Image 1 (cartoon, rainbow, N blue to C red):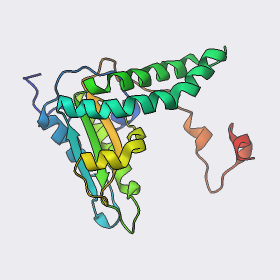
Image 2: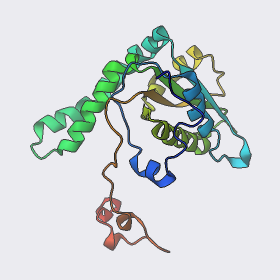
Image 3: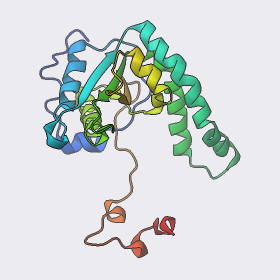
Length: 222
């Protein structure tokens, strides 16, 4: 990875190609990621929209192995407890989709190997009127995920660390009015980017008024 030029890496990928092929990559190599690349993807985050151009975001990249271990030790048991009902359902239901089982396995792999992910990127932000400004932080997260795709890094979004959020925020040195909203494990991917399965846009796009009659999921609103 010594021949990487962060200034030019990822600059040639088309916007729509990046959007359509940015999927959650949870299987990551332990190889280190250059600080310059982390800076580049975080810079992409700073170009997200924010109300009043307040730009409330703060990015904390945890790369020290002992500090990554601290996060992983707390994240792992919470996640495994969280996903267990879904795993049990998949084991009992013969019609449970294989693609969902595959996603479960990938998520479990990340939880069990989170300490190996070379970068734990926390996205935090100043509160406003006592509320977290997620309307700005989540677009920043999406920009970072797209930028990771462009430069060839694997990444995924999780918010489960909020289960120990106050402890985590204090451990990161954040003041109480600047809590974390997201954790993005980043590293060189073991898998490949590709187009994830998505519903056809015509199933979810409506003009002027929602029409439950042509929505395959319209029954959910009853």
